[in-house]
Length: 56
Image 1 (tube, rainbow, N blue to C red):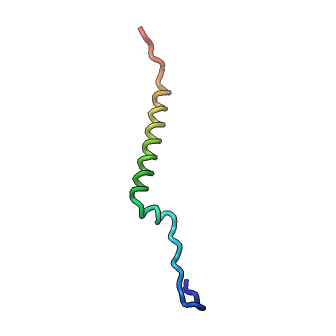
Image 2: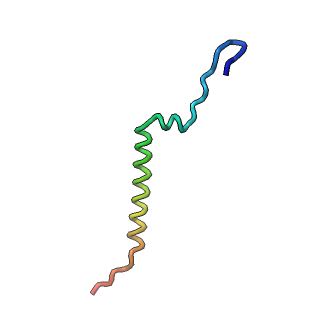
Image 3: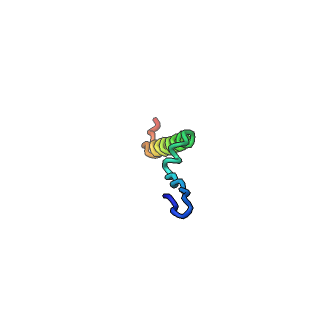
């Protein structure tokens, strides 16, 4: 937006997600963290839901 009194313009605020997309290593870290959490939780759920083994 131009300021009519001074003639200067202020840069628009950059949205949060655009700033996030401009940082590929942050996106990589977020993606790896989410996969680590999801697969760990999935594995724990599978182990906890296994039936008891019948031993001879």
